[in-house]
Length: 136
Length: 483
Image (cartoon, rainbow over all chains, first blue to last red; front, side, top):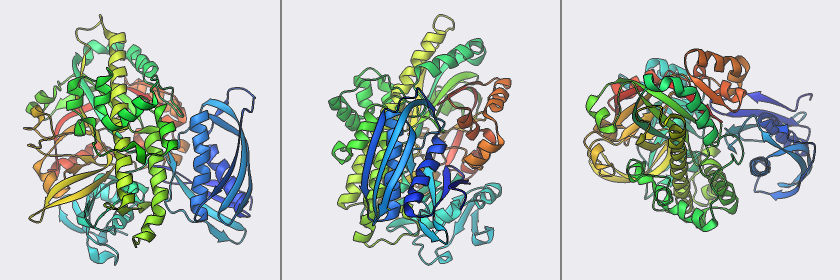
């Protein structure tokens, strides 16, 4: 597996297909894939945002949406431009993660939300795959 | 799915019968020309329309307007009516941008007089109307108690605080206030996102556009609305910002358990719903109404900034820069309405996702002067192409639960648009045609290129030919402001 994600055609919104050798990697790649759509240019080199997360959900798809939604919130609320996104664990629908970020006032794209459309985390020979549609 | 799965029941009406799929509860109907139907079959939009026909408690048909394109769960352009008793409410049937909608202002200022000042005006609009990604730099500082009032009172709050004229409120759908709102049904995260974004445009396909009224089709309706051929008009397209997005996210998540609790089977998780008369359904309805009120205020405050910009750029340089409100409509909403169906009066939750209410003449919820002509229907085209003002008709009440199209509808994905269209070249091309462009993102501009959208004239031809809306005026852009 040499790619982490690719953009998928969707008429009105943005979609990514994401891969990971395990769920931990899948969730981390999904984060970076989404953040690559959002873009941004750092205002300075200070990493002033540090957050850690412990999330749980009834299934991994909901957990993935919860995780990405937390990152979207940081972008919107604190203009976070991430320098580090570490998913430490995804097990039994529980996620532990930590992020650091600079700030940016120039983002390329605004993602309104992460949708459930066609959202299904699939086991594949090399690990896991998911297609995520973002409302923009 | 292909054209052969449809039965043509009218020149521009195509039906998929319940026999097409075992889980359909009602037939599906698509309003489209052959060309628009073929375009719809290129993505998943028709399959999504069929999926909406599986929802419980539906009345008559699941519908889609001619600007249909693929959404998530519901197609964009989708309209379904679900009985208030025995039916459901679906956050996916409203969308993340609750009460995304359009406001049109117009005046007596003629294009010929305004033209030399359009560049300055465009710059003023861009400076005065906060836009872009993130908190978006709201110019308002609203206290918690004032925000709570705003969520309940909608446009009335804006009027009380000096952002609206009485006639603005009268010429807003529902007078800018959905009364069954409750901020207690809104999460803290939604609250925190919303309180800092009031009066901001956002980004994406949201815009402020200065237009010229190019042609009048219905002189009497135009006179009533104050539309004059050759005069300037302004469109504002935006919604409930992060507030609405968060409410939809919260309730789509909360409803994941509701479908098991109430035994609802769905072909697509994004169609998530709950019985309208359940606690979950009512909580979402009240939160959605709070977001709707927020969006009415948002467009009202932006309208105030538009007037401010016109005054700054034009006062003393033109005869009359003033703008009056034509109307403000929602195109992502679920409303409780009563419709006459097969001889009975049916109360239903009418979900319009990328579709507009288009009530006909006589509706008492319209301002007095509009009752003879019907409700204005505002149809923005894509950037650089025409937009339309129509009015609702009695036929729309009979055919489509009083609904019509909302825009041009996309035909090209955003990723393809970004790869094949350069934003800087597009801006240059638009400016060469006389359209002043102010945009915060060139890739964002590329995504909104005219070639990424359907032909809005074709879309309007379908709604007017079927009688569900009547043409009043065609507008063309002269300035576009985007985040």
